[in-house]
Amino acid sequence: MKTMVKKMTVIVTAVGLAATLAACGNTTTDGKPAAGGASSKPAVPTDISVTTLAFAAAPTGELEAVKKLNEKFNVNLKLSWIPSNTITEKLNALLASRDLPDVLFLEDFNYTPAFLNAVDQGAFWDLTPYVKNYPNLAKYPDNVYKNASVKGKLYSLPRVRPLDGHEALIIRKDWLDKLGLQAPKTMDELSKVMEAFTKGDPDGNSKADTYGIALSGSPGPAGYVLSMFGAGTKWKEENGSLTPYWWTPQAKEALAFWSKAYKAGTILPDMPVLKNGQIKDMIVQGKAGIAIGNVYDAYKWNQDLQKANPKANLVAYELPKAPDGKAYYEQASGFYGQFLINKKSVDEAKLKKILEVYDYTATEEGYNLAGYGIKDTDYTLKPDGSIEQTEEGKKKGYGGDTTVQWLTGYFDKYNRAKVPGMPTDVLEQNKKLIDAITSIPDPTYGVAKSAPFKEKGADWDKKINDMQVNVIIGKNSLEDWDKFVKQFQADPSFQQL
Image (tube, rainbow, N blue to C red; front, side):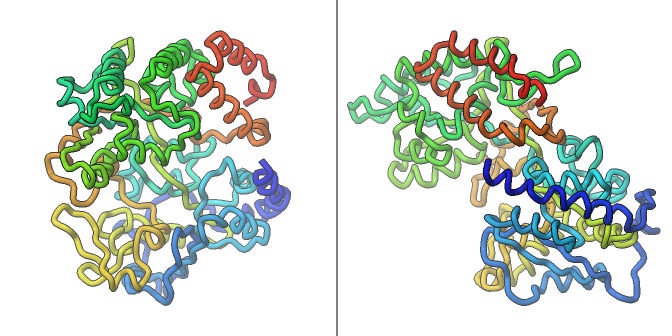
C-alpha cells in the first residue's frame, strides 16, 4: 500500500501533462495505412523510440536484427530497457518529467493511476480504428483487445498471450495405473483418487507418506479450487450488475468440498504456508500426486521427476466437472503488459509506421528476427519448431529475458501446451486438451478500479484469501464464511467498488 500511495503522487503532474499532450499531434482517425497496406516511405528514416522492461542485462551495441528492421521499414528504432524491478517508478518519473518515448511499456493501468489520468486527457493514441487495418495485429482474438481496452477504447497494443491453458489437472499417471484408477472426470471421482493416493501407498514404499493433492495457501488456493465448482475468484454479470463469484452458493459448495478433503488428510497439510512456486517441488519429491498448473507443466516437471524415478509419469488432464455436469475454467486476460503510443511525439503518419513495424513483428518470422536475431547465426530452429539461442546470440544479448520484451508477439493458442523437446504424441494430446476448454472471461478486464480499490484492495484481497484458507483447514466454519460475505455485502466501500 505504501508503494501504491507513492505511485499515486504523480497524478497531479499527469493532469497537467495530459492537457499538454492532448493538444499535440495529428488527430485524423481514418485508421487506414497508405496505399498497398503500408505508409509511404519517406526519404529520411522515421525515428521511433521504445522503452520497455528487461529481466536480464540489456544488450550492448546495435543489434543486427534491429538494423534489418530499420532497413525494411525505413525507420530508426531506438530501444531502451529498464530493469523489471524498477520500471514502474521509472515510468512514473518519465511521465512527471514530460519526457516520454514514442512507445512505452506499461504493466497494469490499475497500479499506475497517473497513466490512467493521462489517458483520460488524450495523452495517448486511441488505436481502436487502426489495428483492424494491420492483418497480423488484427488476428489477435477479440477478447484480448476487449480485455486490454480502457472504457471501451484501445489505448495500447497488448503483449499477446494465450487465453487458455493455464488451468489443467496434473496427475501422476503411474500412480493411477498402479492403483487401477482412471483420471477423474467429476469432483466425486477426484475425491476418490485423492483418497487412494493418500492411503493406497502409490509409491510402493510401504509408508504413509503421500497425499492426494498439493494446493498453495500463498497467495492462495482460491482461483482454481473455487472455479472448478463454477465459482471463480473474479466477477460475474448478473441482472445488469457485477457480483463477486465468491459470494455465490457455488463458492460455499467448493469450500465445503475442500474442507472435507483437508480434514480427511488428502490435501498436503502444508497447504496454508505453501507458495505457488513450491507446488512443483512437492510433486517432484513424490509427496503429492495431483496439482493444478499450466498444461505444459506436466511435461516440464517430468524432466526433474524422472531423474529420480524414471518410471514416474505426469500427465495433464481436463479439470473435473462440477456437480452441475459442466467443467469450469477461468479465461486469462490474453496479454501481459501493454504498449502505449505517445500522442505528443507521434503524428498519424508516424503512428502508422509504428503499427507497420509491430504488424510485422506479430508474425512468427518477424518476432523471431526481432527477438532472437539472425537465423542460423544467433539462433537455430529445432525440428519441433522451437528456438535455440546460439552462444553467439547469447553473447549479443538476444533472448527471451530481454530482446523480446519490446514486442507484442504473435498469438498462439497452444503456447501453454508445448515446450521444446516435447514428443509429438504429448503435444497432440495437450492441444486436444486446450481445444476442449470453454473458458469464462472476466467482465472487469479493461475496467479501471475505483478509488476504494486503490486504497483498500490489497487488504481486501488478503482478508478474502485468509478466510478461504481458514475455512478449508477448519480454523473457521462455513457459518463464519456466511458472516464474512455479509460483511462485504454491507461494506459501503466495497459496494462502491
